[in-house]
Amino acid sequence: MAMKSRYPQFYAKREKNGNISFKGKLQVKPELPVYTVEIIYRGNSTPAIQILDPAPVKDAPHIYSDTQSLCLYHRDNFKWTASKLIANEIMGWTAGWIYFYEYWLQTKEWVGPEVPHGL
Image (cartoon, rainbow, N blue to C red; front, top):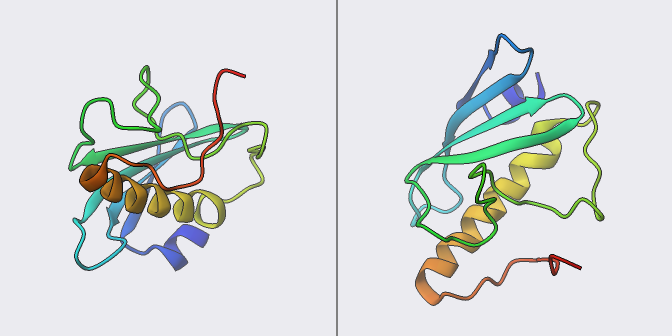
């Protein structure tokens, strides 16, 4: 209900495995492209967030290479649980990722928050 209320342009679909897929359009600023985004709620597992269109360029920052899911937070800084809401936690971070990605496309500098990996 939170997604329907805050992001009515997204529609939900329950998958056979019990996950819920939210798919819709997201535009963070009028001068930036409209993105088609899919977010898969997977209970206590971290949600999978993918940009479907326009597809991110190869080797874009903060995308897991194996799943092509966005990296929105470091697991040491935030713990996902099934009681959290995609609308409250993930959507704002996804919009932020798109904004920083668009800046990165122009400058090749990621100005969004990030945590060193591999430590």
